[in-house]
Length: 309
Ligand SMILES: Cc1cc2nc3c(=O)[nH]c(=O)nc-3n(C[C@H](O)[C@H](O)[C@H](O)COP(=O)(O)OP(=O)(O)OC[C@H]3O[C@@H](n4cnc5c(N)ncnc54)[C@H](O)[C@@H]3O)c2cc1C
Image 1 (cartoon, rainbow, N blue to C red):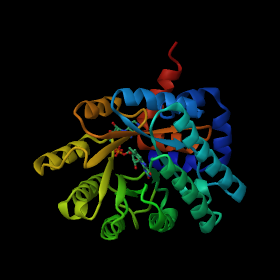
Image 2 (cartoon, rainbow, N blue to C red; image 1 turned 90 degrees about the vertical axis):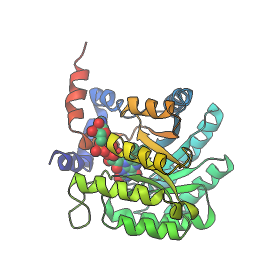
Image 3 (cartoon, rainbow, N blue to C red; image 1 turned 120 degrees about the vertical axis):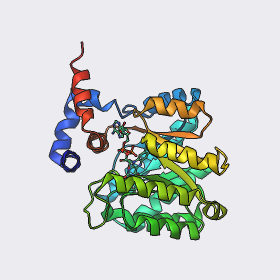
Image 4 (cartoon, protein in one colour; image 1 turned 45 degrees about the vertical axis):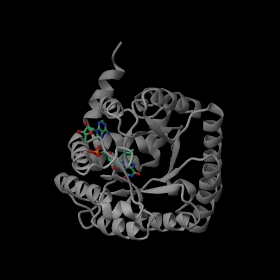
């Protein structure tokens, strides 16, 4: 119920305009967002690197409405790649297709995303295409397929809460393009297309993890980024790879900046490949609201910290 409410709030433009102006809300967003500038994110990436934690950087933004905004978003990503190179840190890049104009024109989106992937390839880095709400699932997978025709340095995100996901993953594995970040899914979806019960989502996530790490899938080039803070799912993955002698660098764990830092550090200390998603930028409202939706207890935590002397 609360989850649905926060997701609803995340889509209200007037609320976004209001919250973005509030100093205390900006302070609260720092719990999950590295800062407003690329240099802020670079500082986090460098600190993570010292702890053997890899990064994927996200310049916050989504759902642009004009071609000019989409072109600006693509230029911002080119600037982010330049900023990373100039700072001497290394990081993958994560982006959302609606930020690159997916709702304006599919061709425009393809052109812009391709140019960023091309630039990332020149720098020897990798681009992950985030997954958004279900109205964008089919189009996101379609753009990803097209990108993989020309570029090998990109991957996609797939959400375990959707019924269609098992089928999607099997097809991507068969096509030899299954570089997948597997997550539970952060949007509000109806029971007609997504498992309404957390236990079913968790069970599907374990099933898909095991399929992605199977000999059969890895023989076809499948690579899994297991994106969760759920210690039961992390443990299930560790057990599965240990039982099958799967090398720790045959897959990776991914977590979000600001969430379960203890788990991030523990996994790194144990020699697992671990990458943390580092979002930055001024358009943090919707990302922030999704983090509150995942765990409404965050609201209390944030409020109590704001009033600490
Ligand atoms: C690297 C990464 C990239 C992602 N990319 C996408 C994407 O492209 N598309 C998409 O739809 N979703 C994405 N997600 C979000 C994902 O779908 C889930 O909504 C989110 O990870 C919460 O699910 P969970 O697996 O952590 O399990 P949950 O069962 O939600 O949480 C397990 C435990 O993790 C901790 N936790 C989880 N969330 C929070 C939080 N917000 N604040 C504090 N503690 C928390 C709590 O201790 C909780 O008990 C991404 C997640 C990660 C880690």
